[in-house]
Length: 186
Image 1 (spheres, rainbow, N blue to C red):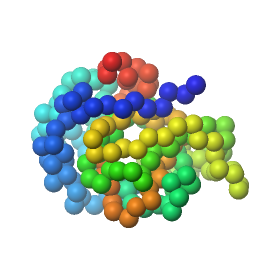
Image 2 (spheres, one colour):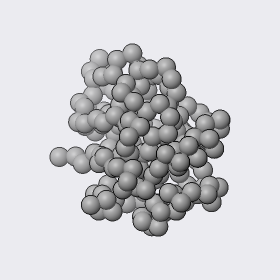
Image 3 (tube, rainbow, N blue to C red):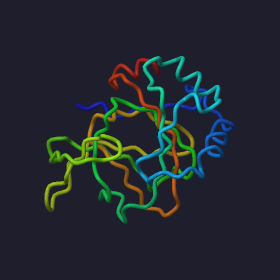
Image 4 (cartoon, rainbow, N blue to C red):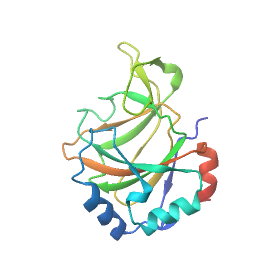
């Protein structure tokens, strides 16, 4: 059985509405490629929330990402973009703007995908869907504006978004396996 994600409350993370507004104001106009995100060094922000997370989990990378997404599919069950596994072990994704129903993070059984190699901005591993066959889904969650998620980024996954408004989230990379990272939120 795969361990894929864990829902986290804002209270657990000490993330407030003021933090959301701070990150939204600071990064909503930043230019970045849609889907891949903008990498930001933690020293470039002044956030008690971020300081708390970095103190709580000393294995967080010194950089975090601001990720923007747009519509990529007409069907919430059919991936419109690439399926990938990250070059990071786990991450905390925190909603900033327009995170709602209609944008799911979907995980797939690795054996139903074909690994391919080509340069990409995030050094992630890209997978091809088998011809005329949907990959085997093993789990999904919807990041909404009321909570965050710790996710296992080593398992093939993708975002499927069916609405036109851009959504934005903060993603903090953790250099621990998903299981080890969950221990910080027991």
